Every structure is written in structure tokens, then in C-alpha cells.
Length: 331
Figure (cartoon, rainbow, N blue to C red):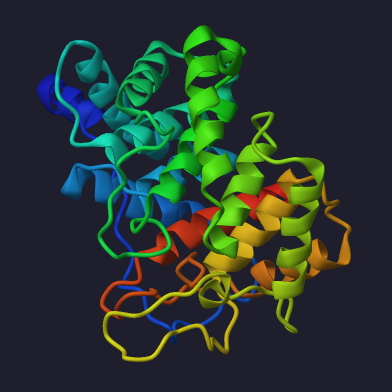
């Protein structure tokens, strides 16, 4: 018989989510799409990052919270959500956040999982309240400018995430007084600042499907057309082709990419579906086929970093978007 103390400790211990091997461009492609492998990979990087780094990031545990509920099992994403919740609750009690970008990311992660459950929770309300407190007079937020595109290099990206947080929050949150006032300022920011590239335009298109008044029908159709035009012959999309980026470890721009990747393809397919493009549409169907055919044996979808070849953290986000895209196409 197992001693009671050992049994209690085993029950209380966190689930084990082994980290995957380092991301490599030459990892073999899986024989067939496996949701189970995708779940294991996302758990390994999402839970592992949260436990080890103890922070919220746009490239790993934030997209993890958005995508992981689409797959079977919930021990991992619920653990990560609790980490997000603890910060939001502490802010409501007077603690100082790490910064506006951290707040916006937390609010979006919580709103996304609330959207999955269909009920707005108090920690999400707390995170959104703090988000509005950090909003600037011009409607934007002081975002991380680490020169790490496409996520941590300009304020525009943060505005799209804040809009998504509001749009995904259930129970009519977008119509509350706080959200109405904040969105008015946010729309003012967008009126004065155009999307700097197709990546950010796609993010705004996604947000505009959740929040009224961010784009008109013509603007939405224009971005849909640009995404269609950017699709590659093999059915996928390439992240370097979605903007004007400059690598840290190369003198030349990476925009002359020769390969489709998981992040750009997952994002494009998912955003097109959110914009109302049918799953049977040729562009969407070909994109989904590329995703089904290009999962790696580890469960990930490879995307080369726009910055350096040390870690390719964008692969984590790309794998989350691949899952979102395939789920949106009926997988």
C-alpha cells in the first residue's frame, strides 16, 4: 500500500510535460497530422516556458492559451491560465505589473480561455481593467520594442492584441462603459496609424471580426485579397513575405524567403476563416492541406526566426496558429 503522505504528494504534484527537442529546420515531417502530437508539443513548450521563465510571452504561452483548448486534455493550459490569473488578481490588489505589454498579453490570454468556456471571470475583468489603466491618451500602449519582429518591435501590434482581448471576452464585455471608452481611444489610434505591413493588417482584420468599427468592409476585403495574393505555389505562406524585416545575424533582409512556414500559414488560414472565407475556398483548403502535410514528428510546425537561428521561438506560436487554423477548418 502507498503511504498516505506519498499519495497526497503525488496527487498534488504538477503534471509532467516533457519539453521537446530543440527546434531544427531538418526535423522529419510526420506521416500524418496528429492532434495528439500537437497537444504534447504545445504542452511541453507552453507549460515549460511558464514554469521556467515565469513570464507571459507573445511567442509561446499566450498563443498556447488561445489554441490548446481546441485539443483534448486540459491539465497543461489550465495550469498556465492559473499563472496568468495570479498576476491579474495581484494587480487588482495593488501590485505593479511588469509593463503594459505584459498586461495586454495577460488580458488576451485570459479572455481567450474565457471565450472557450463562455463566461467572463473576475481575473479577466481585473486584467482588462488594468489594460485600460495603462492605455495612453492616443489610444495605444507602450509596447516592447526589442527589435524582435513580428511581435515585439512596435506599438501597433499591441493595439491589435488589446482589441482582440476585448472582442474575445464573453458576456458582452465590449459594450461595458470601460470597454466603450477604451475602444473609442483605440479606434482613434488606428485612424491615425496605418498597419505597417501585411502581418499587422492580418492581425487587425482578425480583431475587426470581433470588435465593430476597426475596419470597414472594403478594408477587410482588401486585406483578404492581399493574403490571397501572398499565398505560395505550394499552398502555404511565408512569414518573411508578410513584412519588411531585417535579421540580426544577417546583413540582408529575409524577405526573399523560399519556403512556406507554420506561423504564416497558420495565421493566414485562421484569419481568413475568421473573416468569413469558407473552409472549402481554394486558398483556405490549400493552406489547410499544407498544414496537414507539414507537421513535424515532434508535433510542431517549423518556422524560422526572423531574428537569429538560435531558438526559433516563433515556431511555438506557429504551431499554436496551425492548430487554430485546422480547427477552424473542421479538423
